[in-house]
Amino acid sequence: MSNASYRDAIFSTPLDRVARFSFDEQVVACFPDMVRRSIPGYGQILGMLSLIAQRHLRHGGHVYDLGCSLGASGLALAGALAPDAFHYTGVDLSPAMVSRARQTFAQECPDHAMSVEEADIRTLEYAPSGMVILNFTLQFLPPADRDALLKRLFDALEPGGVLVLSEKTVDADERDNAWRVERYHDFKRANGYSDLEISQKRTALENVLVPDTLDALHERLQQAGFPRSVTWFQYLNFASVIAFKEA
Ligand code: GEK
Image (cartoon, rainbow, N blue to C red; front, side, top):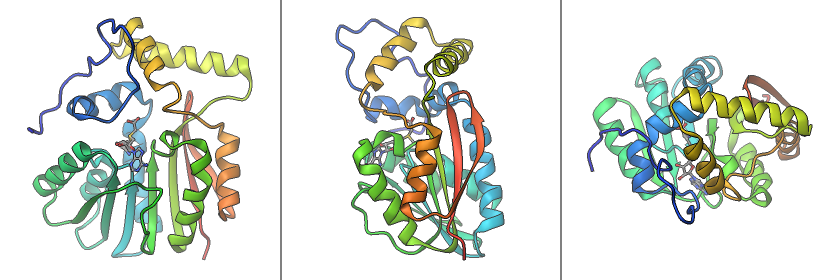
């Protein structure tokens, strides 16, 4: 398929039974437009990943990008770091995402060491790594599978390594949560989504994307072995946390 990016109109017409959301060809074709218009702060988070890598990754170190989709995090790193500064492994379960990501890296940064594996991040055998990126991916795993993955990632990280975890979150306080969700829907409306699209997407994501509270994310990281984690970004109900495996 071509590398063209289309406007996300997946939920723009009434669907009799809204299907569960899945990362298929239809989603891949409009994915860059979808994430830009639906994830507050997505661009800022990508920009910061390369600054974090420059600070925390040793020269020539390895980066995992789990649930890499089209490889946006990898492209951000390649745009800011020299080819010998790092090597990158993107992993995604969706064959459509993996083939587009491979194509993009070959075209956009042929001199960088970028590879993409089609695999389930829950069962992959991890090699030692200096930086792991989970950018809006953990939220798609069943909650019962999340702790085991984080523990395996802690074990795979080298001393001094970092895990960057970005997630959609839920607020424990019902009123605060309602306010954040309402303003998030305003954000989506301002980005051109109709009320019908917003409500149908919400239905499709039910039981597919199960958000944690920010406190629960820090708790999970601690349970996995990380002695320290810091929320470095928050925009409405979206947040990013960095966890340190101190040397
Ligand atoms: C970005 N990080 O652009 N194993 C591997 N991949 C999975 C699994 C799994 N078990 N479950 C879901 N995925 C990206 C955005 S998108 C977020 C990440 C979103 C993959 C799934 O195929 C999809 O590509 C990705 O996780 C989540 O920075 O669409 O909101």
